[in-house]
Length: 392
Image 1 (cartoon, rainbow, N blue to C red):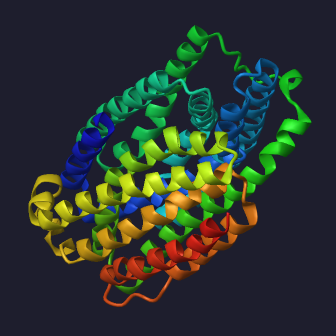
Image 2 (cartoon, rainbow, N blue to C red):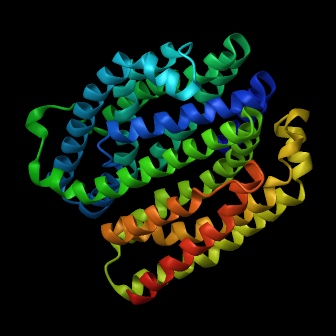
């Protein structure tokens, strides 16, 4: 709830201070840093959750998993951070079509190790089922992000909003260290703690997470650039704004799935148990998402007034396609988590790439075209997943 509310407050302030054009540029930066963060963790967070959930009662195995995860993340982050700082001007030019924001990327690169290790910290807490501490860290992260974004937007405009996530990550890094110290978990990345067999175990998850973590943000960057090229930055801002609404309310659902659902699927071994758990998930999650989506569509005019400004009124027609697409997206994600939990690498890669190809289609009528294609594309992905589920 705290993350949910703080996210909407951030949307309102940012939309008032920087408008649709600024919202579009923030989306570009967030997608780019999502890809870079994924690469900096060697894309092993999902593997950490799975194997810790599976071996948390075995102290020796758990220590190997934790130690190897931190060593891999630290090494990848250090190497990548040097590259980002060295090419900060190029990153700024590619993202914003201007080198004016090179400092944003330089500071992100400088703090990338903290960003990377934060991801592993949370994966460890999730895998060990330290749900209370996991929740506390997430709440702290949301509140700190809220404060940093508000201050950044009011005093520095767009550049302040862009820097907020980096500053938040540094603060959360020290909070995570404190939590691990209290739990007595050794996290320092030393070469002695690296285990080759454990690293190989992570490889299947790395491939799945790397494809998902790269393809989805890359597709969004492509779509946003296409809207900017064919129409305007403002239209891209409308598409980003309605997408952001989906991100926040679906974020609540996916947090539940990641914290409870995936570790649970990782633990279950029998086919009957898996089917029962997935069917139960559909019975609870889909009606919930459907009800929330309907309410958002019904009150879309009020939502635009509350969360945005009059400059965003033109995004109103986008809600229907976006929200119907969200419903089918969650339906496909429920089975997607099964693929991750059971390391079904080939099936996951085929469906993920298929989804991304389907999403990148010619614009029909500006940003509305991309929201429209979300409906049949997410629906077809859900249908593609069903035979796999029925065959298990």
